[in-house]
Length: 319
Image (cartoon, rainbow, N blue to C red; front, side, top):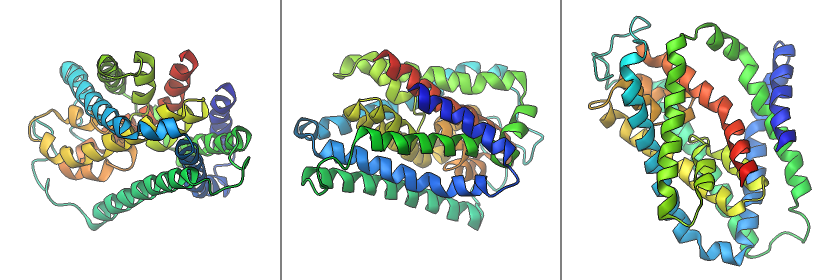
């Protein structure tokens, strides 16, 4: 995992050096096609493995357990440190104590709705490609030797480069780093600790080890990247669990955010969605909690987004 790991830093450097060129735009356009190729390959290997196919129903149950447990763990840990976190007020609409916006909480812009629909469509597309890969592998559609580790590694390295370039594109990384409050750093750390706590608690009820559950949880709802990294580390079945579990975490968060905002602190609501607060769930969170929380969501999402490949690589190296 050292080479893909290094490609992220190379990508960040390239993004900073070539920020005024077409490179960031090109990287953004290439990200989804590369993910699609890798997910198809992962599905193909899954479909061609008879033993793995026999375990698919149980994999779905375990994935759901991990998704619910990681959300619950994140909420618990963040609630414990909420009194020490800075108030997001003063950056936009004022928020009530439980995080719900005092005004306009139920009114979202057309752009928000479009963004949510687009995110759901992208999620369904990726899941569909994975299922297509499973069916293709099950019926052995491709000639022998087309889906190999070497081919997948080339695409994985390209994916890591695009991820790094995306992190530094548009000055997002620099802007967030300059605006960080020291106390705010504890927020993504609490989400991380809670996610790992929830994942570890699930291990005794599954045939997965604690380290395997932690590897799945370290996706923080970044299902496309985490599942591919785990599968390319040689754990295809675990990569399938990671894909389903992190898709479910994102989906459950999207559904529960409006309801949770009525009972939980704003920080706890944001933590439910993991790193998707940077993109997929951002419109829903801002619409529900108010614009005061926009920067908190972006910082939380970027911090976890940056950490995903490192945590996944770390736990996979211990397996």
